[in-house]
Structures are given as structure tokens and as C-alpha cells.
Image (cartoon, rainbow, N blue to C red; front, top):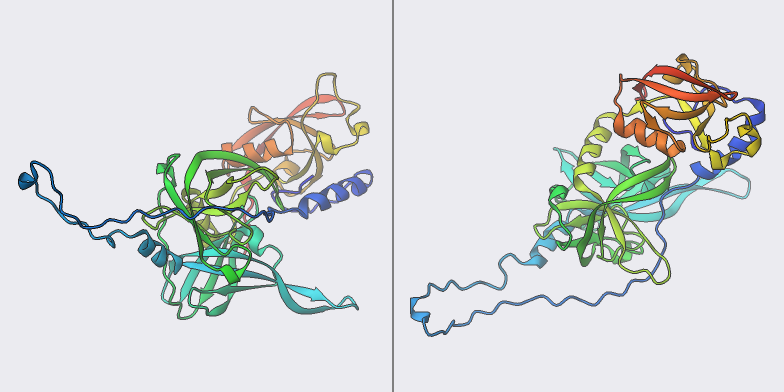
Length: 394
């Protein structure tokens, strides 16, 4: 079960409390993680260009222009791009033996990319799972300077977060590229801090293996299907939040996860830059991604004991069960109740709680009026709701 949209302010019915509390603890405690698997990748030799006289039978008629070996150097591109890469350290308070909060200690490390600067402020994009539950966030710049960052905004569902640092920041800004123009076979490079800051700004090379992949992930906000770029550039723990760049040095993706199983190599994934760009602007402005808000906490059929499903008509084998409701939300005002079993929204079938989240966020907008079909005590009912915003008042 996952209480997405927002935590409900309604009290749960007693007989649901123990079961759904246990399910919620499992979901809310999860986050995207990267498993440490060593990748071995041979160094790819770089072609060198040497000035030579071109001699052919018709060479006298050719206009030959010498090409310098250093022009359009990939090394120069990487050197410049690396100045926008930072190390991100998640600091969390440690409890002493008496249960009291003590000093903060390093809990994990990742990477980040400076994508915007003003006179005295720099903004960094990274993954939400890199900074999740941090009591303090430390950032290490390309020149070794360490600064404390402020969390400007985060979105657990898409695994994107924006950090803000102030002061005289000498680091470069990385330009966004157009990820929609990527094709399988395009050369890309990953820059980040694999296995910690000792290997900061490590560069790995590969190609785009596929575009528009959909990967199902478990986040602290619930299940979600991430749209990602697949690459065979080596991505390891610590690369999370780092840059996937094209040969022009532009940011085309944020490295986020990989498949790490025995016998599996070269399956890394990055969030496309076009999606990241839209998200970071919202996070800077609102501190969150503004989405339609229904106001229910749900559980899928496979999360619920069979006795809660006994009144359903034969043939109804999927849906999402309402576990709690915000009484001031659209769902609460439309009369939905705990234990209602939702089967469609706006004509879109709901097979599980993830389906409702996907349809709500992808197919509808704030202010839309949608019809929800649901079963209550075995009887099919319909309610019309007007979707509101999940934005919290400042």
C-alpha cells in the first residue's frame, strides 16, 4: 500500500489499521537503490589524426585542408563538462546508545550536475534517492571546495531533486541537450563519482542502447514507471545523479539506476534531459511537482487479505481498495469511503494502485471532472470528482 498524493488526514477504520500500517511501512521505507556490481570495460582507443600529405594520381587538383589532432577533442569536451559535476554527500543524524540524536555522519554519496547559476546561487540536479532522509547535504565542487547545500525541491516519484548552494561558486554550468533527438547507437558518456568521492568525476564511455524504455520502480511515493534512456556506459553506485552527456558536452540524461544481477552487464538507465528540465523548473518554483490530487490512500488486491474481497461479484479480480481518505479532498467530498474498490477513473481501467496513479498523473489535469466507478459492499456505484492540486500552502 502507498499513501501517495499526500498523507491522509482521515482516521482509518480500526480493522484496517494494523494490516495497512504494516504494508505502508514496507512501501514508504523503499527507495531506488543501486547494487554494487563491478563492471569491467576495456579502454576504448581514441582515433588520432596525423597531418600527412595526401598523394593520389589527381592530388594536384585537390584542395587539402590539414586537420589538427586537438580540434573538437573529446577530452576537451569532458574536461569542460566535468567542472559542472559535483559530489553529493547525504549526512544523517546518528542516535547514541541512549536514543538521543547525536552528530551527523555520512550515510551515502552520489553525484549531481550544476545546471543553473545566478549572481550568488547555483542549482544542482541529482536523484531524490541520493539525498532522501538527509539531515544535512554536503556538496564537493570540482576544485575540491566543500559547501553545505539547501534542498530546493524534490520529487520521489520521478527520483529527481534540486539542491541550491549560495556564494561565489566558480563551477561551470552544464547545458541541457535535446534527449528526444537521441537514437540507438549515439555515443554518450557518463560522468560521476562511482563508489564515492575518491573516484570523483570518473568518465565512462558507451552508446545509447535504446530510448523510451519504461522501467517499473518502487519509490517512497509508491510504484511508478520511469521513462528512461538505456545505455551501456558503465554506471555504478555513486554515479546516481550524475550526467549522461553527448559528444557536444550537453546533458542528455541523469544517471539513475542499473540492473545488477549475476550474468548481466551494461544495462544502465538515465532519466531523459527533456523530462528533467521540466521537473527542475517546477521544483525551483514550487518545491514540488504539482499534480492532480484525489486524496486517497490505496492498496492493491494482492496486498489485501481475501476476507476484504468476499462481497465482490464473480469475475471482478482487480482494482484498488481505498484504505484511507482525506475528508477535505475531492474523493472525500464526492462521498468515497474506506473499503470502496475502485475499478476505473475517467474511463481508464484500474487494475491496481499503480494504475490509478499513472492515469491520474498522465491522463488528467487539475480542475478536470472525472467519473470514478467503484464497488461498495458488492454494488457497482459511480461518483464524479473534480481534481484539485496537491500543492501545499506556503
